[in-house]
Image (cartoon, rainbow over all chains, first blue to last red; front, side, top):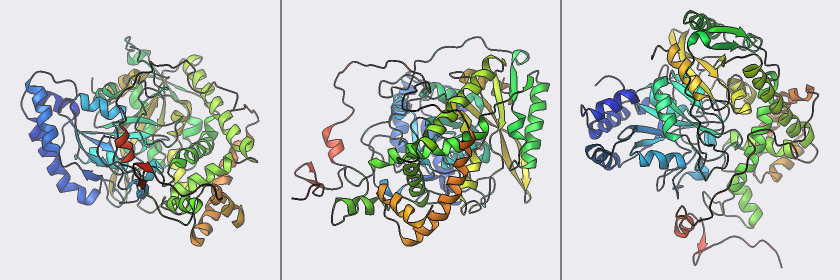
Length: 474
Length: 95
């Protein structure tokens, strides 16, 4: 077997009986044994692969297979799978065993997908480098002295190093797309409400979405179709609509907000790759057009107000009382204080900034202002997609390629800047995809760079269509 | 942001900090607050408490039928401390 199979290839190999689920799982568990020591993408590899494989094979043999039957997947450590550990890479939940299935895990179980294991992440998904895990630092498979991005760095590293054909992550401000860009795979952040958040350990509830990390755009679509849809347990989810009319490249307009992209802090080589990508799109017949999204200059600041406010509320549930870790104290207050001291530095910092921006004297200055920016950013996107008649907006996924382990640990704001081009999609709720689009050379090593597209609400189909054309998958 | 302010916020957040952590957070806070202060130049202001236009607004309802998502035992076994099947917590009110 070659290095790694795409979902599509694995589907075909299984349905044509060229391979059994058992063989497929054995292949990946051997790859994990060989590679995980250097990369540390997985926090746990499940011991019951054999049993899961048997059940999947039975489905295939009985002719009951569906799209993902028998496909091994890596799952980010903040997505609940019943009776399995799920820790959000935090000491707070080190021994926590999920009492129920997340909706997404339930859907995958129904298809008899094989869960390979749970992947490392920044603690509670707060970070952009997977260095903030309470347990271990994940390394970039392209250069192990560099970070894989984050917070879904374990999932991205697993896919791009061939330890899994595909994986799930979660994206609150870029946590699927940015690691996809750093590691060289495809990452999708669906429209807010496309995929159920039930059973996803919450960070910023108005921003979180679960999304696939895959090797191809085709695979991204396959996995997205399996996990999306309305869920009674998540009131923000909606019924999928079918959008049939696929636009040809010559009828598709790509908007480029040059005023945001040509700025300090954007790596020169990353900018060169992006410019080349835009001419490649033009060669494929796409029309390109400069667009203005003035509010996006403030979205990163607004994001760090809103997300930290939501974090301070969501993290309040970790009180040492009902589940998770508990540190005994002389009274109730001391128990809270000592238990919550188990959070890592980044989590503490975010809870505290969130508490600050929501406190009585600052609510108007920060929270209300950030909410206003969010609304205005939404209007910017509405105008670009309707009045300017743009079908997708293009950005580099990240202003830099993968940085060195430890490079951005001193200054939290430097780490925040890694999200500058991904956050607008979460703020506005629009879908966005990151696609490997070239490489830049740093210290003699080739590092991947990603091209990102954002489409109107509910129009993942446009992202897949443009992405497949760009990657010549059609 | 001053040191006693950091201490006050940590108490509001119910997080115990070591003195080293307190010092580190003091300087982090300065950087973070000066970065988020960028939004102050936006002149418009919408009240988040009364405005509902972010996200899709629609009625969501479902039939109120008992399902088997949660079994009592699946939740009680997660209690860090229990007594006779009940959740044990420290006394909240002093006599």
